[in-house]
Amino acid sequence: MKKIILVVNNPDFLISHRFDICIEAMNQGYQVHVASPFKEDAVSKIEAVGMHYHEINFSRKGKNPFSEFKTIVSLVSLFRNMKPELVHLITIKPYLYGGIAARIANVKSVVSAVAGLGILFSSNLLKYRLLRLALYPLFGFAFGHKNQSVIFQNADDRNSLVNWGVITEDQVKMIRGSGVDLATCPMIDEPSGVPVVSFAARLLKDKGVEVFVEASRLLKQRNIEARFWLIGEPDLGNANSVTQAQLRAWESDGLVELFGFRKDIPALFAQSNIVTLPSFYGEGLPKVLIEAAACGRAVITTDHPGCRDAVERDLTAFLVPVRDSVALADAIQALIENPDKRKAMGLAGRKLAIEEFDVNKVVEQHLKIYTGLMEKAK
Image (cartoon, helix red, strand yellow):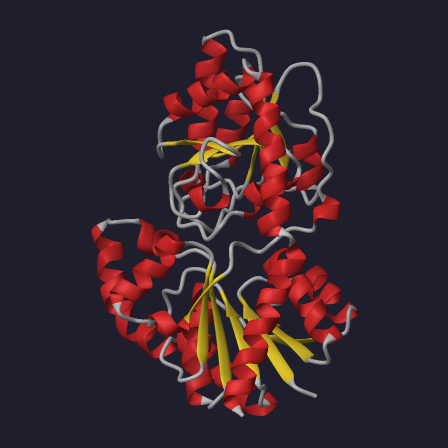
């Protein structure tokens, strides 16, 4: 039985964004292994369906060279012991460290999934420019396997790494997001009453949460009636996270309604009239925008890599400049005042989701990449 190892820095992400790929791989006869940090609930779900789990720790901040080196050594050991036919490396540390380990351990085939390049590439601050320069040799080695495909979710990320010279065009595979199970995204009529505008993401400043709140403040000043749902929780291990004190202040001012972390995002979107994501983060292709489209909801997001790739401009979504709360407020007001436009956008979004974002199509594309690499490795 052919073995596949998926390496990810958060097992919850695997369950929310790659689980269907794992299930179909097992259905097709592969033995599927997952390597990630330990989270009890997620690991239980992984093992319950018949996958094999291996604990590999990835530090959040990466400031201890010994700890980072230890992670690479652990991956080399795992790959040598398991001798997988293919490893699938998801997000930046797994595809960097896993790519290095796969070459050292002589793994036959490698899939690297670039699900957004994050602040490392989206920021032009000096410290990030210097960090990119320092990491260039690691990227070059991690993407230098002779039998490797690199999956991108948007063209900007692809162009960044191709132009940087660390990957070649023949390694590139484009898959538009992680897909969505259309059956879990109810396409129902908009709720009546005061319009609901939703934001769902990790509550990071560069996800645009402060822009969203300021747009609420502006519309309140204009006497535009709307409810603003803030869905998500702070990421206190991230320097760009908002704080609990900020959340309490916004709630106290009547600017937002706090929902915290939720797993029923499509159900909440179905109870909304408009979905927003004013992000300027280094996105891959945000799943919440795919879910909003599948639920038939009009979207407002930024003209920013990843975000603009998840929508059709002016057909399924309005695009606004990054960090522009006035433009966001104007777009929200325009949709509040034009329910026919909202409905048309929502219908177009559902059509886009069916044609482009059906998880079954995404799974099929991944399995085709697996098969092609393993055939080439024979």
